[in-house]
Length: 401
Image (cartoon, rainbow, N blue to C red; front, top):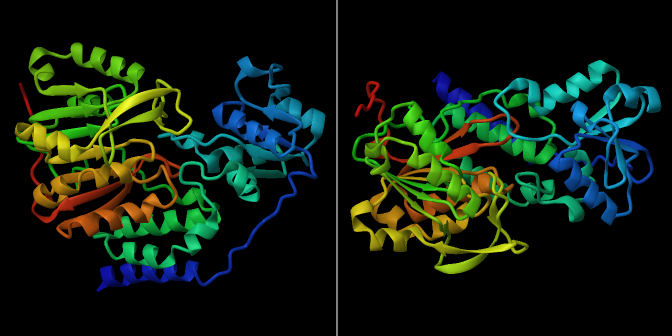
């Protein structure tokens, strides 16, 4: 009875979000001086957008001493001490730091609080600026125009009913709320660092064949080996050449019996066989992009599995920078016929949070759905779709040589 009551509360709260009118806060960035605090990639992206609309920040702020008193595209970089002495405590600070962090000290709410405690009276996160100029800045990962959330009310409420436990329902509600208000940063505290291989949801076994889509530099394999988790084989897909080279070097350093269990392919995965433009950054941000500077081969999981019947996946992990929906469409046959466990990132686009669970459920109704945060501030949010027969909790298993 208590569990039903808790579930009902989150459903009621979710419905209540759509009963309120969307409140737009216009900060008049084109009329008041402001600082961009964070002279990294996000700061540079923001400055580039501001220049397009004819707005110029008075300076950058940063905590990195190496950046002090330098300039970025003609904008000087100052410490917070110098900003305070030069512009006073009334200057508007726009935080241009937003990146996945396992430590609380680097989360948005902590950084804002730190600047406020230092003495600045007006500190806002990047969403306030981006929402004022959506045509210039949005979408950006899961930051999108809140109006799009309101127009997706029916889908969002339908998706909520798919989740199987209270943790998922709570986190789903918090994520939807954030996509509307962008204010509840401090609510993202339920972080579980067991990314992709959730022992409370399912157990790997010695027969599991894992498709690692978006293998990066071998980080998922590294986690598997570190935790001594069971598996039969890993099939890794990584289209970025620099990342693929890192992946190969990592695998080549492993013991021979591990190397034999890993196959690597320099492919993207999508909904059809084609050549795609690709933004090859050589890091975790590599992605399919119309503005890409290189070309990569894209395959479908369905075709790959058909051509490799000895390697039919039992687990599919996807972290492919916003191309997850396309890759799932290219996996329909496997999902329908084999029902592999799916661990799919749903934070790269605003609507992935509800569109991807609904898509999987449309392909096959044999799944239970779970949502988990693995890093703070909306990063590394993963959807777990687990076939009912694999939703078991077993005694701890440790695989040995």
